[in-house]
Length: 113
Image 1: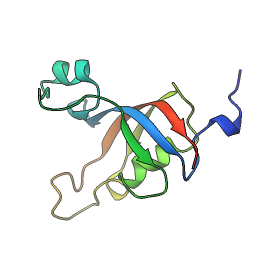
Image 2: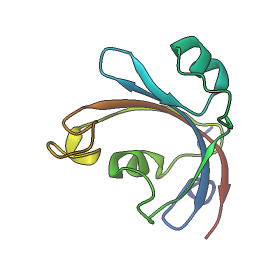
Image 3: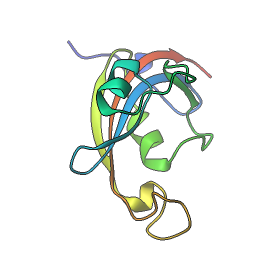
């Protein structure tokens, strides 16, 4: 059964999302999921592992991450490959500039406008 458009994310929504960020090849660099962090050797006791909250259209996250969230529904999962130009740029000072990133996303909540 398909999900109606009014139950999918759109610009202006505040979306809660769990994610696992990996480099091409599979090495994880960040996640909002405690069990994934432990598995990848990234666990930090001081961190609060919970979905991140993103207001779509506000530029809080890299463009490719935000674009991937548009049109998703609660509990929908998606894996996206984000090229450098939609992540941290092809060049520059950011340590992840020039890298293609792979994110596994799962929307946990959508708040309208």
